[in-house]
Picture 1 (tube, rainbow, N blue to C red):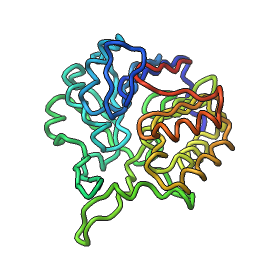
Picture 2 (cartoon, one colour; picture 1 turned 180 degrees about the horizontal axis):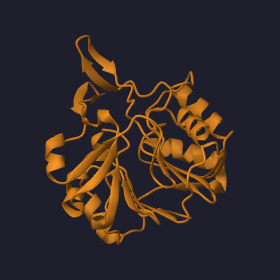
Picture 3 (tube, rainbow, N blue to C red; picture 1 turned 90 degrees about the vertical axis):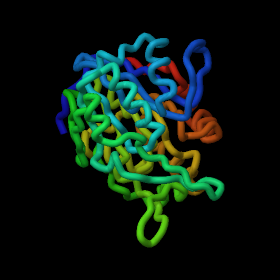
Length: 282
C-alpha cells in the first residue's frame, strides 16, 4: 500500500508474434516491452532472441541504456534474447523468480519440446547479469512493482495441461509459480503488463488490486494465455474481466487471434492489439 507514483511511462512492444505497419521490424513467437520512465529504462522480457536487437534498432530503443531487465517467467520465448541484450547492457540487474533456471517442456502432437531458458546461469552472469530474485510483491524501482508469486484462487483457471515438468512419477503439469506480472503506479491508474498470465489473468488482477489498494486499471496489456486453455476457463475469464475497472485492454502473444477478437467485441473501443511497435504512454 502507498506505493510511489510514476510521472512518466512509455512502453513500446519490441517482440511479439505479429508486425503490421513497421517495415523493417520482424515478428517472432515471443514477448518483450521496452519501458522508459523517470526512474530509468527497463526491459520486460526479451523474446526468443531472433527479433530483439533488430527491432530495438528499428524502433530507436537503446539497449545499452537499460537500468534493469525483468523476466516474467522462465520460458524461452521470454528469456531467449537475454544473452544478446547483455552484449549491449554489460553489467545490469536482472529481476526474476528463483525458478527461472528450471527445465520444463511442452507436449504438442505427442512431441516433447524443452521450453526453459536456453542459457546456464554462469554464462549469463559472465556477460554481466546480476540476478535479483523475488517471490513476493516487490517494488523494484519507485512506482514500478513486480508481483511475485500469484495466489491461485479462481476455480476455473487451471492453466495449460500441455506445459509440464519431469518428475520421478513422469510428466506433471507445470504450475509455473514463477509467473510474474509488472505493475506501474501512475497518475492515470495502474498499468499492468502481463507476461503470459500462467497464473490466470483473474487471479493476477485480484492480487494486484489487493496489494496496491487500487482498483482503477488505466491499461492492461500483454499475453493472457487464454488461447491454449479450456473453453470453460476462457468463457469464465472473459466474463470476469468485464467486472474490472479497465480503461484500456491490449492483448498479444499467447492470447491467440480468436480470443483477441472476442475481447475486441466485448471491450469495443477500449481494446487494442499489441503487435510490434505498439506504444502505451502516460
